Length: 304
Image (cartoon, rainbow, N blue to C red; front, side):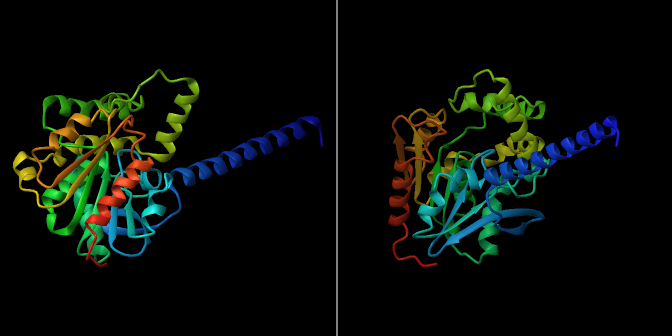
């Protein structure tokens, strides 16, 4: 075999090796971000993935924007902690994780709240506690107004009462356009009170991987555009009969919206965690402790 042919074969082998290594790394990264596979059900034509662990009174956990159930709830240890006392059910919202990702904004908004009820129907659950964070908090707040009879309690955390203003509509569109352009989460980070620093080459590469191999930017853009359907009215808040807890960080950009619920929403309790921001609240020990106390208070006498 001549030298040129040996180099050719070696080159082919090197390329195949790089492809194999890249595939293994991508698979490992996917598993780290999305977690072990759970179960699926059909929610009005959209396939929804969900985690179902533990026993007892059901608690449904609804995650935030671009942070699927595994990252929001399992990695910080909340699923493991709550599953000691409850049956914990954590879906990947449509547009996220292992669930289907439609590109039509009309497939989001209210449909994301209805997914929770359809999942409860699928599991034959009459009632459950529902805990939402960030976008999941807005979904939970909408659920309180649409289906109060299905809720034992609701935790509307890292969220609040968003008004249907032109400023908020413009923000939703700006978030969608940034995702479509591949420039990241800048407008959203600014709204949440989080720093949007210039990205290094390494961070740009990580963002490209995160958005290309894990998320669907067009689906997330549709989620953002459909979000206005989650708005609630003052009359709905004043008529609330469900026990509601809001836990939010003192440094969270959505703190004014959380405070806006106080004095307007009936049966509402606000807890502000000092020094916590939008990203550091839900995985903290004080968050878990306050949530466990709230759930226990409204679980007394209930059964699965």
